[in-house]
Length: 207
Ligand code: AP5
Image (cartoon, rainbow, N blue to C red; front, side, top):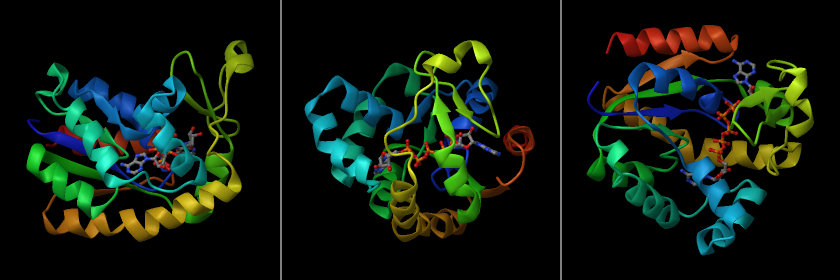
């Protein structure tokens, strides 16, 4: 597959969880704007300071900040044969900008109803050493690493509701935008992690 892939869906849909398998299949690097922003926040950079309040409130970071980050990232050598975008684009303005700088092959939309999202987000735990994503009920971490797991600051019930509103208002319109371009593939994300991944891999293998 020549172009880039977009992993699209609401917070907690399973984009990060599924990214590893897609990276192994396609050898395209994962470009997660959420991860890039969290790194900027923990390094205390100017960008991180600007982004932090938006992220902790569950609101989208302004488009110009995100577009600047992506422009920078796509100049790196490993991005020359396309990347796996995770959590980008999230607004029509971001998608329009992206269409000027990268060619997309497919947009994978992982569909999960709002009722499932809160439980997924509140129970999520991250391994800061490996970046692996776990869930206290659906995907428990091995006992040996349980002591070092962390919970993201924005993974609480009230912030999730703001994130879901931002998704429905600003991001979900992108689905029909990409559908009209013939790029959108819908995946039922409300099944086991393995089944969702198998479907994504089989769709991508046909491309
Ligand atoms: P970001 O980090 O992108 O967060 P998000 O989109 O809200 O997505 P998540 O990381 O919460 O969910 P995910 O779909 O990756 O789910 P995961 O695989 O972890 O963004 C954070 C913030 O940064 C935003 O709020 C915004 O402020 C800012 N930002 C980022 N990008 C931006 C942009 N482009 N423009 C503007 N602002 C931006 O899974 C979730 C949990 O569910 C895990 O515990 C997992 O184990 C579990 N799980 C996964 N799949 C399943 C399954 N099939 N069944 C049961 N449990 C499952």
